[in-house]
Figure (tube, helix red, strand yellow):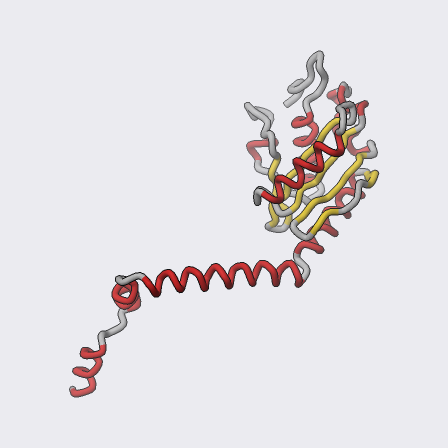
Length: 199
């Protein structure tokens, strides 16, 4: 991936997102698809989706040299949650110095740089905080713990229960359902049961 995204206009934000995900992956925090991290990756994803203990995580980053960077980032992060793309979105504002970094030192720069970070999840959203990589790791853990707390789990269970009830009602009103279920479950008809009892 060396040199990718480095031109007269500077490094692309997608490159920084992938590099950040790679560093978090090396710490054992995120599981990132190998195709994204590989040197031969043809196209960087607009939305970087990773996995944290079975929960989908999106990293959305912007470089601070853009107008209204926090506002546009918040809008996009919320959209990822609303669209169901991820359960947690990490909004990151990279400092302007990362627009034209020394590519050979990009990993060290990201690890040493203070990032402005905000976490969004189905359980709510945090505040903008200045954080290094270690702090981001801790923030992500807290967001995950908040997400899996009983109230969020109960909400998901209730949603699942309602979906099952709707499906059951629709199945029960369908004319051929009983016959199909009987065949699938190998349930004898009533007259077959009576014949067996007589024997």
